[in-house]
Image 1: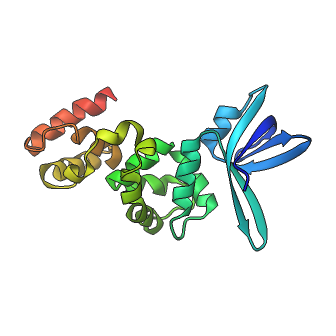
Image 2 (image 1 turned 180 degrees about the vertical axis):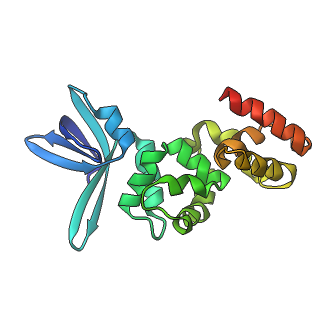
Image 3 (image 1 turned 180 degrees about the horizontal axis):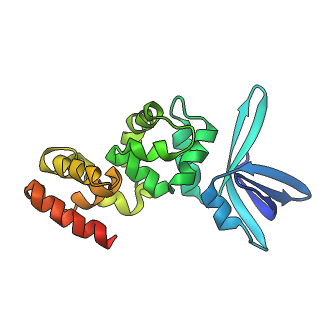
Length: 199
């Protein structure tokens, strides 16, 4: 298995980067985020990789960060989520946003990715929620959010109201989690709107 590739970037397309190492060009399928980070780099670049071997194909997937690689591996462990869908999801959200969406049950976030329907998006949340919630590295700044409290009572109603107003479930859960759970729904919404406006 190839853990990483370091070399000169000789080609950069919309979803592929070719890294030359010792005269060999390695084509790595990748995300828009990785492309934006390495495009235009004059020196050497490093991509952390995952190799997918199938009967008729061997493909290399490369990422600028270990967090993105880890999120990709989690995504592709879900039944029905292949490497292309994993790349599409990580092209519309960074690893921390992915983790927050899974932990807060925001399956709609994943339907923004090309080729990901509501059923697959819900399966991602269902199969990864426990794993992601315990993953301190991937959760990053969201580690202090108690998602069990935001899914019940007044917090749940306030989140639903914020979603109706057009906010994502992940962002709503993030701000609501910082509010006292005994606060009334109306006051929660007011405080959350102030918090969301400051984001």
